[in-house]
Image 1: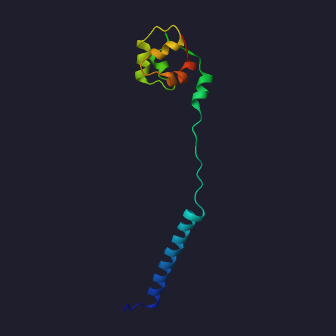
Image 2 (image 1 turned 90 degrees about the vertical axis):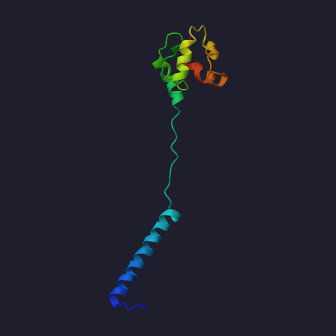
Image 3 (image 1 turned 90 degrees about the horizontal axis):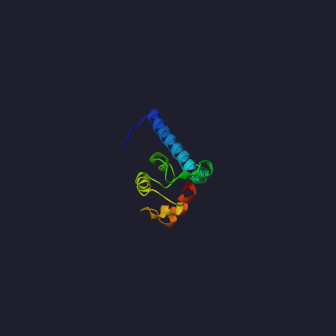
Amino acid sequence: MLDLNRKEILAISLFFAFVLIGEIGLWYYKVINPPKYEILKKPNTEIILKDSIKRLSLNNSSYEELIQVPGIGPTLAKRIIENRPYRSVEDLMKVEGIGKKKFEKLKDYFEP
């Protein structure tokens, strides 16, 4: 078998003792005391924006102004501009890509 002297046995014993202590510590932090995560929720920016910005004119708003409205991307902004003039905010529903649901989200941002 292995012919180990006293110092070698002590070194091997200490090594395994440290490994065991480390494993117990990891187990404690993973199982017994897991980190407590809080779910971070994005504030409802849509409500903040509705209250903080003025209503945009459907007939005069620039492309840059339109794409800043939540729910309007570059393509939809181009379509809104191409379908001008508008007599009422409800005319926005004639734009391809704006159905009833989308209109309900957008109507508070615009005036004719």
